[in-house]
Length: 107
Image (cartoon, rainbow, N blue to C red; front, side):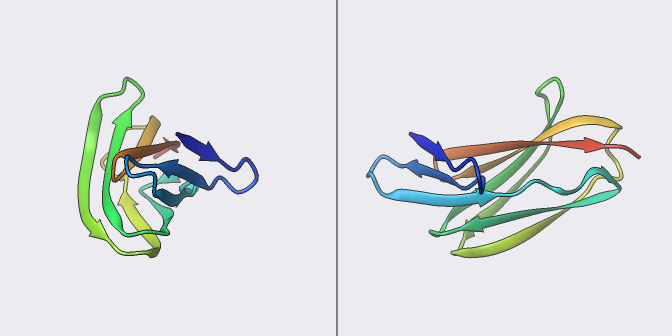
């Protein structure tokens, strides 16, 4: 089950052991972006984090496994200079959950 706070965008999900996983994924800045963008995220419990970028057709074009990440706030700097103009989606896989947002690239 996933609960999303409409005011803050905070996501809360329940894993198979019923322990809450608290994770916040912010919109990338700037959006639309040109050559680079920053994605801010916060983990309230340590977990494995994988980031996947897909194009508008849902085809993965970039994936990075950040491995185990401790509790805290982080910024992921994404170089988009090699990406074509268009709509993309970035998905953060945190443990068994996933959280997706959109980004626009305008070179």
